[in-house]
Every structure is written in structure tokens, then in C-alpha cells.
Image 1: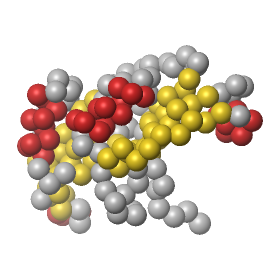
Image 2 (image 1 turned 30 degrees about the horizontal axis):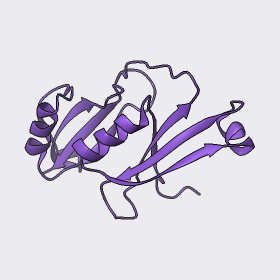
Image 3 (image 1 turned 180 degrees about the vertical axis):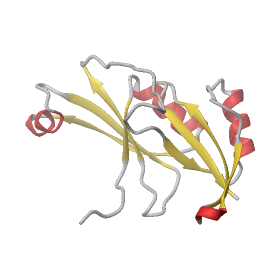
Length: 150
């Protein structure tokens, strides 16, 4: 009934700032931007006169790698709350890398808040293998994860 994930959507407060972060710091490729408005948009988001700028970025051309969808609602108040791993919601979006130390260094050099340095995990007994990973925050404080399978 349900196929692959089509995209992962994140509400942001400043689309241009977020595009710059995901493109210039994380290295995702900007795929394009759309502007949504009209009765269908109002119905979809359940808000009258709803307008949204929506951008898509991706780090892979592979069909099974969904893009990140960044949504900025225009002329609407955005409630900015600190993401928390211990609150029900999407807790984080995880990105793959083959050089986690280099990514971590780049994030630190760009003053990105990292919640820890890369950590080693061994889940071979559970059939998931070994990896290194750490959490960090985007410009809106949304928690992201970087992972390098070993």
C-alpha cells in the first residue's frame, strides 16, 4: 500500500537561510523551489489564505534517497520551539556520510551546534552493523543526525 518515502518536510522560519545551510554547509544539491497558494493549499494546510515557499534539496540521485523539503509559510506566524529528542515528533533526520570526521570539523568551523562529537556504535549482534554518528542542529534548532556506516 505504501511505497518509499517521497520526501522529508521541515518547517523553517527563513527559507533562504535554511537553503544556504543545507546547500552550502551540508552540501545538498538545491533542486528547486515552488510557491503554493490557492484553495487547494488552504485545504491541504487547513489555513485560510495560506501561502508557502517550498524548496527541495538532496544529497543523492538515487531514487530511494528522498529529498529534504523545506517549507516557509509566508505571512504566517511560525512557532519556533526547541527540538527535543524526548518529545513525540520526528526526532531527527539522519544523513549519510563516508567521512564523519570531516563533516564534524566543517560543522564546528561553521559554528553549527553539535550535541556531541562522533560516537561509535556496534549493533552487529542485532544485524545492523557498526557505525559512527552524532546529532547537530540546523538554523532553526531542528535536530539532525550524521551517520557513517563502518
